[in-house]
Image (cartoon, rainbow, N blue to C red; front, side, top):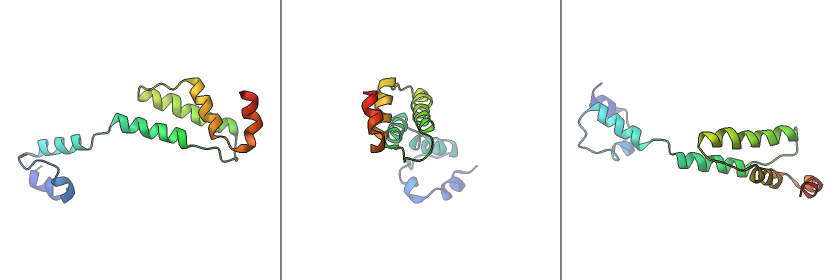
Length: 109
């Protein structure tokens, strides 16, 4: 595929970030791919943010909610080579529960 054809399909904002010295399509596409490569740090931050910001809305099965949080912490964190201790997960679950679970929190502690 011609470099000129590829460049026509790329927005100007992205073209400006790529070196003008690239003369073939393969190098151009490799440079764009490198520029937009997924960052493991961003992925880890997103996972942590979703785990911290999740809250039980007071509807539905509380067990299912806790299992969802556990699933996020185990499967997705393992994929990122991160570890979240069970104790920290329990505290995150307790923090995310609404006031109506106050007695449950006290009994657990």
